[in-house]
Image: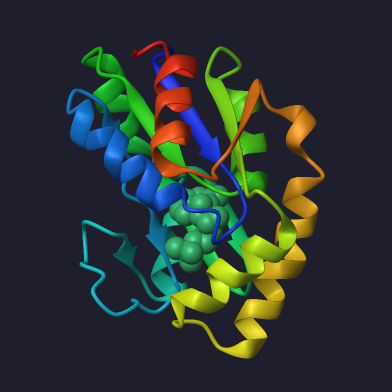
Length: 182
Ligand code: 5GP
């Protein structure tokens, strides 16, 4: 598989579940833990789900060049800490980033040999159902995420490959195939 894989897709598409299953089956893959200014959701663990930072601390890290990429998404900042990614790549470990579109574009410039994969929902209606079903976001946040989803879905052609996350097991098998893990 490519040394660096980027997975992008609209919020609510089920990237997290898919990536979780992938890592269980392929523990050699290292998943980057992002930093964010978003508040933790119920059950999220500092240092595992995200590094939860204040906006001030996040901006300091931006100024220090501490992020490989970063972007604003639905009113919060998200970024990939640079150093751990470089360390894992230098150790020869396959690295996976699960990030939104702007970040994927930045990584495409800095790692043109990376593999970029787009995950899409069976339909926009199904995506909305999943975001609402999560029950963790305010109506305003849901609207912002749906707005962003339309923008992201229009960018599918920029990616090396795309897969539909309808049936989880089928999507997982396709993902393994595309990442040359099967
Ligand atoms: P959520 O708030 O639902 O956890 O994430 C919102 C969006 O931010 C998702 O599309 C997710 O892929 C993206 N995201 C998470 N971490 C990063 C990151 O480090 N950089 C960028 N650019 N996007 C990220």
